[in-house]
Each structure stands twice: as C-alpha cells, then as structure tokens.
Image 1 (cartoon, rainbow, N blue to C red):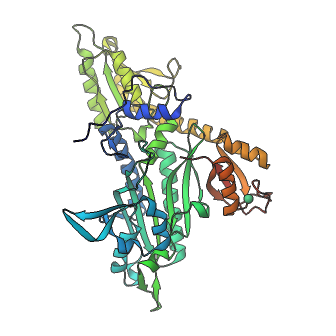
Image 2 (tube, protein in one colour):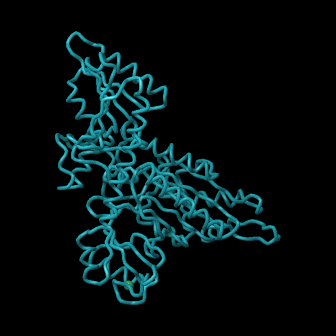
Image 3 (cartoon, helix red, strand yellow):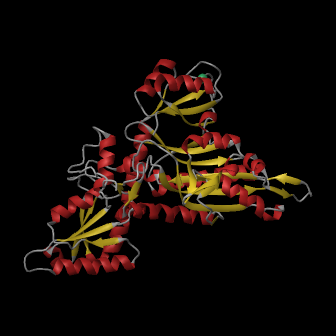
Length: 486
Ligand SMILES: [Zn+2]
C-alpha cells in the first residue's frame, strides 16, 4: 500500500507579489479548489473547484450550442495503428502519450494510447459518417478528460490528466473550415473576457508553436501578474491533413470525390488557473461573479438570546434564490470574523451581513470582495426589500471592475520596443507582452528563445510604418507578441 499523499499545510497565504507560485499553490489548497492525489501528476478537483469548472462548462456549452454544435462522446483509448497515420501529429504527441499494454494478465497484440487529444479517433468515425456534401458540416464538441505524460504538477496549469472540451468539425470547403476556426476563437475570447474577466490577445501561432498536423493554429493569450503569458485556448484549422490521413472523403455537388476540411479547438481547466492568478489578492481568491459557485454568502451576526438574524438571512436567501442567484447562508457556530476570512479566501464576490440592528431597521450590509478593506465603496447598507436589485447591480459592478483592473494591467504591461537590445532586455526581464514587428522565421524565434527563453505568443498583421524585424533586422512580415510563458 502506498502512503497517503502529504498535503502541504497552508496556515497563511504568502503575499502574491513576493512569490506568485507559492501564493498560487497556497490559494488552490486553502480555498479547497484542489488536493494533491496519490497519483503523481494528477490532482483532485474538490467540490468548490468543480463548481468553477461547472460554470465554465455552462457558459461555453451554451455558446457552442448557439453556434450550431452538438455534444458527443468518443472512446478514451486509441489503437496505435490509427495514431500512426498522421505523421506530424504522432511525432508531436509521442513524448506525452501513455500506453495500455495489458488487459488483465494478457499482453495486448496492439498497444492502446490513452487519448492526449481526440483528432484521430474522431477522424476515423467521421470517415464512416460522411458520404455526400449533404452530410457536411459535422459540428461536434466533446467534454472529456485527456492524459499527457508531464513531469511537473501545478493545479490547473500543468497536470497529467486534465478536463477540457474539444470541438471537432468537418467541412466541404477550406473557407468554411477557416471561418469555423475563427468563429470558435472568438467564442473563447468572449468567454475569457466577458465571463472569466481575463483580457487576452487573440492571434495566429508561429509555425513552431503550431498544433502538430494543423495548417494554422490560433490562440488567445493572457498575461499573468509575474509577466509570463498563459495560452488559454487554441483553435486549429487542420486543412485536409487529417481528412487525408483518415480518409474523410465525400461526393461533392459536382459528383467529384473530395477530402473534407477539418478543424479542432479546445479550452481546458487551465483557463481557471489564468482566472485565479489574474484576480486573486493577498486575502485569497477573487472570483468574477459569472464564474462564482457562490455569488453571495450571508453571514448572520447573532447576539446572545437573539437569533432573529439567522431567520432574516434564511428568508433573504430564499428570495435571492428565487430570483436566480447562487447564494449560501453560513449559519455555522463560528465567530463572524472567522467566517469573513474564510469566504474572503474562497473569493465569494459579495458578503451579506445581517445583525440585530439590521433586523430592526429592515436592512442588510453588502460587502464587496473585490474592494480592499477600508475602501469607501467596500460596504453599503441597503433595504432588505430591495436586496435583489442591489445584489444584481453590485455583482455586475464587480464583474466589470475585475475585468477593467486586469485589462489595465495587460495594457500597462504590453511594451513596444524599437531596437534589439531593449527587446531582448524586455524579454529577459519579463516586462510582459513584448510587441514587435517580426520577420516570422523559425531561426529568429529560436535565437530569441536561446538568449532570453521568451517565445512568440501569437502574431497579427503588420501596422503602417512597420519595416524591419526588431529581433534580427530582416524585413518584417507580421507583428508578434513575445513573452516568457507557462
Ligand atoms: Zn527576425
């Protein structure tokens, strides 16, 4: 029997600015989002962490369905012979694939890969389902776990097994496939900014950062408080590469047999890591209301012999629940101050305090988690009979304020440099997103990486006046954000 896994004991959350990594680990444990598990490289998602995942799912799933997609489910295991058919793809994923070699006592005649992603198994099925142009497009999404053999473990950011969604579509034309790729990139950008309140740069990945087997990979990139970028979702135009490898063909309207054009796109629970790092503070999490498992928590303040506050909280909670809010009444036998600190760690956007005097006056005190202690906007007293309206307004204000704060950070940490030395220095010092006109060559990118460990995050068209690559002096062909990254 293996030893139970040691959970680091978190007494206090270390200051975020001093050591983001220590802060992050402490917050994930203390807010009860995750636990380390006895399986190396795998974490347990605890109920509060799973609540975040459910809210991500809820919002993204609605956006997928609005754009015409349906959910389906494909097998976890992929026969080796199938995986080998797309050469670039298999080469890209080979170092990360885990293999099943035995079934019970019996050695398998063919190894089975545990999916690192599902292009292969889905491509094989699409080949069977598509006959005519009338069968296209196929627009399918899968909510699933995948496994990639990783050395390090960081909750949400890097784990062997992780939760994600992967969309897989097949189209009759290249234009349609490209349109789909960009449409889903926009779904991700919208989710990141409007729901998770994480501002991002959307653009095209360089050739070296492209998904193995893709014609073009697009990404959204967020910037973390330590100046490192975090790729938060990708959308791939796979051209006909997978259709050719897996024989996804159809008879077109002109009676010609053609290969389909496919796309794939994914967002994982890594997005939650981006959200946690972007918004948290020295007291713990600050969860944007749209993502919060609990939008408002009631803390009754009970005086000896006067339990009316508990009843008032329960009544008010009932009203808010009926109005569609996610709320909780914390009526545990603990001091209010202890409860405040705990809900602060968990990042609940609003705290609603009701004491005996509030009961007499028919009021409640609303306390915003996003504001610092002592900020004049942190606390407001409102009439209980208008509670729902005030809670709605404050949750909207918190959602907006968290996004604006993060956007101001991204803007102030996006630096434009015009000459090589300043560029390399900015990359080395993690100044943030270092924005330059770039030549677009792999050699130039590799040199920058060797000298500074920064890579291109994504690229976009040149702006008027851009002439030469700041990194190497050759003619510029695009603009690129360089940064060190997670
Ligand atoms: Zn260059």
